Image 1 (cartoon, rainbow, N blue to C red):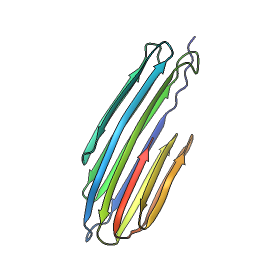
Image 2 (image 1 turned 90 degrees about the vertical axis):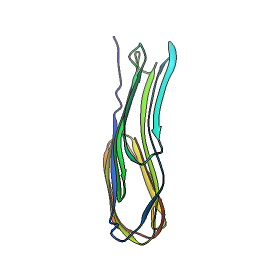
Image 3 (image 1 turned 30 degrees about the vertical axis):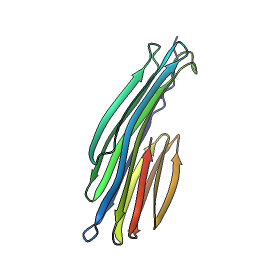
Amino acid sequence: MHSRILLPVVAAGAVALATANAEVTYDSAFRSVTVWAGSPAEPDVMDTISSAAFGLFDESLSASTSEGVTGTAAQTSYILPRSFSGSGHATGETGAPVGSGYGDGDSYFEVSFTIDIETPFMLAGDIDGFGVYSFTGPSINIEDMSFGPKSATFGEIGTLDAGAYTFIISA
């Protein structure tokens, strides 16, 4: 008899900047999906896909062992001239007997940008399972808002002062 524990995580987030007069400069981006699977009977399996490019990132991965231990992760995200958004998920299953193996996944999204004048913004998203997000800069400081193991919705509407900002979400 095999027992499994499934740990799903889904995260989605979006930021829109009302940039009719503002100049938005993207300074950096890093997006990735990573998976792990392992058990005492065989070597660990790990895989990752990442990108520091702007535009579309649409990737998914899975890793598994012969004992049925699996990890999966996926992400579809966009970094566009006036907004960025993403949706990602990660799951992990343990093998039998429970606790003898592990599977895990991670979907990570980070973008840093600079705006030259005060700019209205809207942040909206949700996390179902375990996840974390942060949005930091001169006029906003939401750091390491962790959720789990239940669902949570988050959102902010306001104005960003001129300066450099970083947004991160991970599931």
